[in-house]
Amino acid sequence: MPDSLPASLWRLSEAGEPAIMLGRQHGPDEAAAFTRLLELGVLLHGERLTEWDRCADCDCGAEERRVRWDGDVACAADHRRDEVLASDLLFTFRVAIPALAGEAAAAMGLGPAEELAPGLWRLGSLPDGRVLAAAPTRAGLLLPGLVGSLRTVDPEGAIVLLGPPLPDTQRAALARQGVHHTAAAEVVLAPGQGPLLGFDVARLPDGNAGRHRLVLTPATRTVRLDGREAYLPPRPFQLLRILVRQHRRGQPVVAPHDLHRELFSAETSPAAVRDLVAELRRQLAKAFGAKAVSGLVESHTGHGYLLSLPPLTAWAAE
Image (cartoon, rainbow, N blue to C red; front, side, top):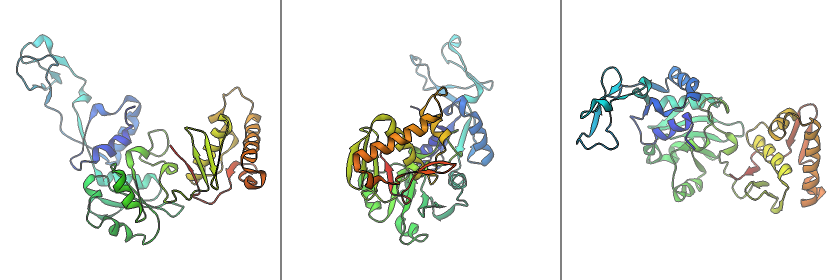
């Protein structure tokens, strides 16, 4: 599956500046987001391409084809093979990495971003206390004193570091120092899923690995609660997964109509949500005992349903 436009920006930034995007690297459904990124200064207009790949079966010896001023690609050996290009294929755009970090902070409602060291930014603090930081380039992740720079803004708390992918050994070494790395391109929201350049808070690490009270494993529909495991039927598990997701996003109350939209067809009675919540409670009580799950799935009068757990104590494995 191709990257979304925001994910592409983070991947292009990994090698550092200049980070160049070709006009053809975003789909027609992302045109509005592309225009907005230009307005924000995250994307800057670059030069037009003057060369194009040679013909796939070329035997004339040319290494590339020159692009004529009118946007055509001319074949050096046979003009009957000239190729007409859409003009937007020839435009290039540069990713302004500082602006990418700054607008990511703004999208999360944190802003303004603070540059702690070359290529390293503090985006702000999440409501649950985690500090969000970003090192968009590989060079930023290799900074001498990286952890020390991050600790200037929070000496002891959990820090989430967004950037290029890292080997597991390096991620583990950072985690031992309270810095929890995740690949930015894997957790950035696609256009239409939330604020442009925002991140899915539910998928950000929290430093509590091994200490969550409630853990879901979707691949096996396994639920672990306080160290005990059980399996749930598909529908109740799906409902519980939504509640965990919203709990991790810091928006724990889920309205019945939102649950209905995610779980049922439009023709299904709204009462199906209430029935499924009751079934989830029955399944949890059967698996873990009524006393252990009493009040776990709570009704918020007039608003919806939520998990009655402290922040950052639930997790759903991907």
